[in-house]
Length: 385
Ligand SMILES: Cc1cc2nc3c(=O)[nH]c(=O)nc-3n(C[C@H](O)[C@H](O)[C@H](O)COP(=O)(O)OP(=O)(O)OC[C@H]3O[C@@H](n4cnc5c(N)ncnc54)[C@H](O)[C@@H]3O)c2cc1C
Image (cartoon, rainbow, N blue to C red; front, side, top):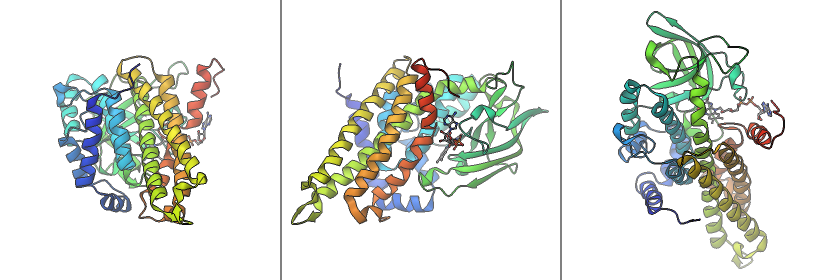
């Protein structure tokens, strides 16, 4: 087995670090976090740097990189600012759905703009009635003349406040043979219309993700705005779920790595009883544990990403990576906060932000309880939901 990362991964990590040092230093990130939004120009710059086209085929202006490269990118981005990584995962995931299921006309229209940062697409699946039991959603769409009319409400729709369109999962056709997964469609609904109202949620963590409530009151979408076959939206979506889990895991690998860097540096610099606090075993041991767990979750995430990059079955590994990385990031940010003492609570400390951002992991994009249900089933145990 070869554990040496390819040279292009090291170069990619370095280019992200350089960009943040030069263009988006910590003070600016803090102010973005306070403003709770990512300025549109940042996505535009990401497009120019080729960072939104990683998963887009070359024919549409992307670099067609594999998921293993995407996971490295995402880890490094989250190390700098997790909210940005969360938005990036959404854009990458919607890009994959278009790449794999779009018609030639849809791919030609949207993929180049997505890769350039000229088109921001949100994804609306979760509803106020529940995100876990997603097939019970109640948003509906019907064809009305030459357009779809979409009626319903979405909750926790990331990037929706600044999006050009929202990919809405809704019921267009009846449930077939008791199968709720049938009869759902994905409809690309333009965001800028009176019939779409968006209210930003004031969240504790991942504050700049532009996560919103979305009200669709007979919102219009062109008749050809269905992505993938009509009535098969759930199945269209399934192909992107492993990637979403792997990239989400990478976010929490990045959060853990960033927290560890901060705590180790602090343990070296801060003195008590005339020595650096890092000289005390009570400070060293939790950091040694975080370093070990970081290595574990990074390897698991990279294994899942590598499998997907080889087009091999990886649902089990993707689920495990998501579970392990998100739970580790929770524990790790807590351990690292303790090393910083009171300073960890000060808003100027990036660790305070990482601690808040890590809270999202256990329930998004899928709750860890559902991940364990899935993994339990994979062990041959009865389906529990
Ligand atoms: C910052 C943020 C960004 C998000 N971005 C998006 C987005 O862009 N698009 C989108 O569609 N959604 C998004 N979500 C929604 C996210 O995917 C949901 O929060 C998640 O799926 C859980 O749904 P819920 O919050 O409604 O919890 P619920 O479904 O109400 O679940 C509550 C609890 O019950 C548990 N539970 C429910 N059923 C079972 C079961 N059968 N077995 C065991 N436990 C169970 C869950 O695990 C959880 O702990 C986002 C959420 C947040 C907070």
